[in-house]
Image 1 (cartoon, helix red, strand yellow):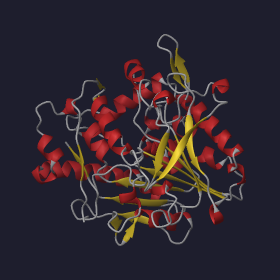
Image 2 (cartoon, one colour):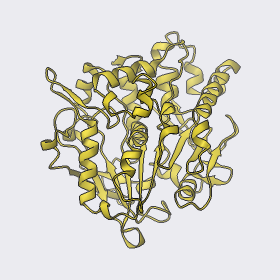
Image 3 (spheres, one colour):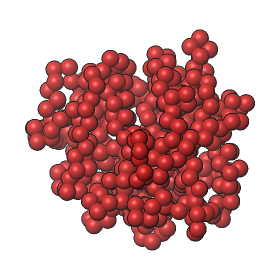
Image 4 (cartoon, helix red, strand yellow):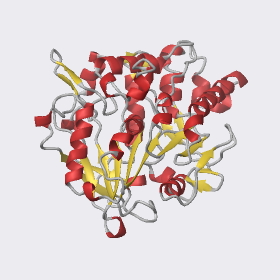
Length: 410
C-alpha cells in the first residue's frame, strides 16, 4: 500500500543560492511531526532535553552562543551497554543572512528547542516497533550549527558561532562519560544533514572506542548529490560552497578527499563514502524528496512553472521529465558503486520520493512499511549490523515499488 504524506508548503520569502529557506523549513517541519510531542500524548516515549553544561568553556555552542543539547533514553537488559547515537538533521545555512535567521529557530539556538521530544523509529523503546535496538541506550543529538556538525569559526559582527565540530566533540565527550565508554556495540546514525554528518564523523566515532567494540554507521537520506537542476545549474553545489566557506568546514573535511578535490566537492558524500573505513549502511530514497524539491527543481530554476504539475503529481510528468528523475537515480547508483563493493557495507536504496525513513514509525517497522523484495528497512539495517546476512538492496526503477510512503510536494 502506498501511504502518501501530503506536505503543504508555505510560500517562500527567503531564497539563497536557489534554496528556498521557507519551503525548506516547511519540509523540515514535516520531518519533525513524528518527534514533536502532542498535548496528552501517551502512546510514544517522550524524552527530555539535556543541555551540555560544560560546552561553553570549550566554545562548543549553537549559532547564537547557547548551549547545545541531546535527548538520552537509557538502555536496559541485554542492551544496557549498547548505544545508538542519532544526529539530527535540518538543512544548512550558507550566508550571514540565512545563519542570522537560523539562530532564531531551534536549528540555531537551544532557546527554541523543544524541551521534550518523541522517540520513534530507530529510537523507539518498543520491541514491536524497533526489534533490534529498542533496549539500547538511544540518543538524539540536537543540530544547531547549520554545517552538519563540521564548522569551525565565528562572525563577530553578527554574533554567529560556527562551532559544529566542537559541538560534536563535546557531545561525544559527555556521552562517553555517561557510560558510552563501556559500550560493547555502538551505531552512529543520522538523518538528512545529520546523515551527511554521520558520514563525515563515522571514522572519528569508531576511534572513540577500543578495537573490541563493534562500531558501525548508518546514513539515512544523507546521500546528497552534486546534481544539475532542471535549468542546468548546480543549486546544491552553490549552497555547499557557501556553507564550507562561511563556516570554516574545510579544516574538518577528510584529507583523503581534500588532497585531491576542492573543499566543496569534499562536502558531497559521493566523494567521501568509498574512503570511510568503518562499516557503513546507506539508506536513501532513489528520488530523495528534499533533493527533488530543493536541488533538482527549486522554484528559481522553474520560473514558468513547467515542472509544477509533475512535481505535485507524477502522473502529470511527461516522458522526458520521468527520464530526468531516472537519470538522477542512475547518478546515485553510480555514486555508491565502489562503496557497495565492500563486504562490510550495506545499502537500501528504494525507488521512492521520500526523505528520512529511519526516524518515522510508519517507514521504519510497520506491516506496510517500505520494502525491497520482502524485507523492510529496520530488518535490513539489523541484518547488516548483526552480520546476519549481507544487505545490498537496490530497488527497481520508478514506478515499480508499491510500498513507498511518498512525500507529495505541494
